[in-house]
Image 1: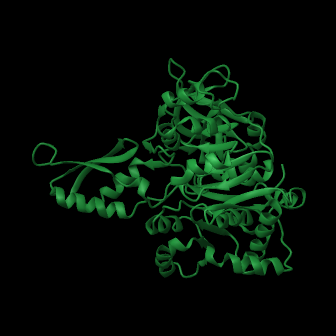
Image 2: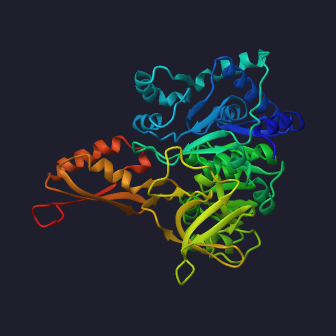
Image 3: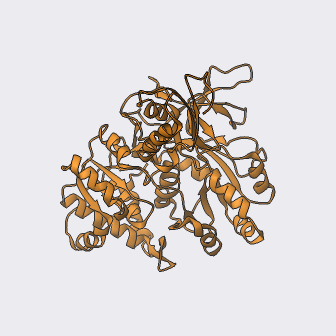
Length: 474
C-alpha cells in the first residue's frame, strides 16, 4: 500500500497534463490538471510547514477547490486533517475543542463571525482564511523548502466527528491504512479509471464523499467536478455527463421527482451510481434499476472509513442493502431465530477506537471489531439485509446522524421541563415535552436550543404535555 504523498507525487509526474478538478468560475467550469492541482497541494504544504503548522488542522468550509487542496496537503505533508461539517455552529466547535487540541483552523470567509467568537476563547490557535490561499500558493511555488511526506501508514491521518452537540462528541481517528484499505475491493467491484468523470455534491467532510469519492480519485485518476449550487445540480449533470456519482436517498428522491426522459438518459450513462448514508426507498430503488439505471446501494460508517457493503453491478437481487466488501470480517452477533442480530466489523479499514472511549450508541471491542448498533442478517452470498437500528439514532434523508440522547440532554437543561422524548418525524427530530411551563415559554426555550444546533439537528415539531392536567397536549 502506497502513502498519500506517494500517490500525489506520482500523479504530478505521470498524469501531469490530464484534467483533474473542475470548479465553477463565472457560471462555467474551469478545470485544473493533475499537475496544477498537485503543484498547488505541495505549494500550500510548503507554506503551512514554514509557518509552523503541525498537529491537528481543522477544515471548516463548504466544498470548494481550497478545501480539496488543503485536505491533501495536510494528509500528505503537514499533520492530521480534522474536517468538520460546514453547518456546525460555534457551540459545536467549542465542544469539539474540549476533546482534542487544534493547532490551526482553515476556514471559509462565510465563517468569519463564528471564527471571531472562537478567537476570543482560543487565541493560541492559528486561523487561516481560504482568501489567503492565492498569496500562499504564489509564495509556496517559489519556495525551496523540502517537503517530508507522511509515510507512516499506521499514524493517525484524520480525525472525524459524527456529532458535535454534546460535551464529549465522538472523535474517530483514522490512519492512512484505514483510509486506503478498501480501495482494492472497491476497484474490483466497480473499476474506475482516467476515462471516468465524477460529479461531487455531497459534503467532503464525510468519509463517503471525502474518501470513497474524492481521496480515491488520486488513485483512480478520474476527473472530478465540484458542485457549487445544488439548485443547479441536474443542470450541471446534464451538461457534464458524469460516469461516477455518489448520492444519498434524499437527493435520489428529488431526482426521481424531477425525472424526465433527458434526466433518465443522463442517469443511464452513469456507470456506477452509488447510494448510501441512509436507507434507500425500495420503491424508488426498483424504479431506477428497472429503467436501466446502474444504481448500487452502499452501506458504511465513519468508524470503518466508509464502505462496508456495496451492491454488485450484476446482482439481480435488489432487496439487499449491498454485498460485503472483500477484505472485511463482518459478523452478526446474538442472532435471533431469523438470523437477525447486530453487525460487527473487523478489518484494515476499522478505526482503533474513539478518542473519548466507547459510548451507548456503538463501541469497539478488545478484538478490534466495531459494533455498529445496526441490525440485520447476511445470506450465503454475503449479501447484507438491514432490519433496523439497535441504537437510539435518527438518520436524516441526506445521511447525517442525530443522536436522540444529545437533544434530550439539551432540552432537560431547563429545570422546569420534567421529561423529554425526541423521535423521528419525516426524517427530522420532533420532541414531546412534559412541563407546566406555558406553550410560549417552551417554544421560546426550544428556539434557543435550536440556535446552538446546525440546521439538520434542529427540532422541527413540538408536542407539549402538561404535568398538572394529566399529560394532555397543550
